Image (cartoon, rainbow, N blue to C red; front, side):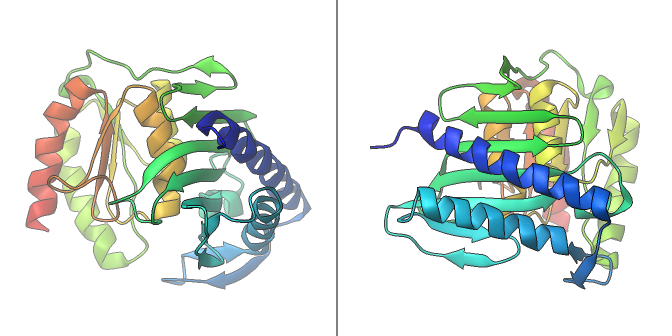
Length: 269
């Protein structure tokens, strides 16, 4: 039976290869292939090419596993494991040349549903900064091999909090209203534009907390494990695990302060 550590090695290898490809295509010139949910929700040719690379490599290494990718959808496997992939998280950053995009590769046990899965390993690679965030279940989180731990002992009033916004204008307005309510209660708010990196930044202590509504499974599969293995508490709406309705990540002491505020607003939503 393949261990979680061995699965992580596969995740890192394919994520590094895809990240190198994405970075090269950025140098070559970005070509927008299509729009998805709105005209501003773009897909580049590099997104598709990177996912094809990842999918092919995983099929060769783990032919019995399932796959769920942002660009090519899902396919059930026979092993009980599924690879959950975002070939370029932060595509708009990528399009504009902002150095905050990443390849995210995770492997989960069970159905590819955050409400039921168990994440075994994950890697998030930012090729511009040369950063490789990794974690496997029970093995801790690392950045380029150095162990990570969330920042503890930060009160809500001194917390630097990350978040993100959806592509639908009405959704964005609702999210902005909550930020307007929250910003006077915290040190400041950051909107970086790549959920996987936001979660890794919590793990690295670059953000004290992060919350967002509307994420897809591939947006947070690897990053949530990395944050959790670095000591973060991860929660969703109500008693649900983190998922599309809501994800909140912070050190346990800060989570207890921030989560009720976030819950109150998103319950009203």
